[in-house]
Image (tube, one colour):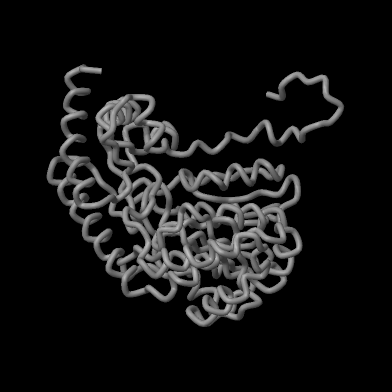
Length: 380
């Protein structure tokens, strides 16, 4: 509801229909609130390890130039990503996190009254962006059996007013993927005027051979496909906010017309360039995360919990009890997770848990069953 105001200016009514993004609690905030020192954060899908030495050195070196504006076109990073993926530099766009790119692309293509289709639940920025643009949100529930995108149902929802379909693959918060054949069958039937956005922030953690990246599809030349990637997750640059995307040239031109001139800061560009020279080190880290993900899934399953097979750097586990209570009890023990009830009634017993270091994961695996048992006994 729009608050009363005696000001002369007006705020668009769509803004008051937006539910603000609620980030995971920072470690320092939990320490202050609860007066505890030993806190681990498994809530925000961050990489549990800091960047390699070469990346840290690049950040240190570029600090001498902080009095200068960054390269507004991210020339060297653009060239390096172009070489890595074999995609024309003119089709690459950058954002202050892939979240900014979602907004910029929406600003470029959505007008009031357009319909935007995406899965429910999925990344919370989709409804925020759609609502702020005055679009009609078409939220299609995930499939009941494997919590994947229901592309058949999405296809049924398409009409002349649909502007964009978003496919989060792997999906956040479930970690599940939508499989290759389903995606290709879907693309065959989508009208070419509808933009298909593949959000692949977690793609580097995928091991399932039935996954097809939107990057492959984009390179096949489909004119209505765009793909978003991120340096926040697999490269551990969440604190610098840097996302990139592969989009048709016409859309890249539109995005560059409306983005802020220096939206990618100097430090982020330098760190990302160095990251791409450290692929072997990052691959070692990714393999640790993947092994830990599989270990956590196996141990939780053997303890009787339902865990959906994740292809991201987090897991989605059904506690079988009120997840808000589980979240609060774990928080008091210094373990920060993500309460699944924020994703709707259907997931009020779920937790999303980021894969941490082996020691952090051990701590969660130890505390989580005890907390669930306390709740089952009525000890709230």
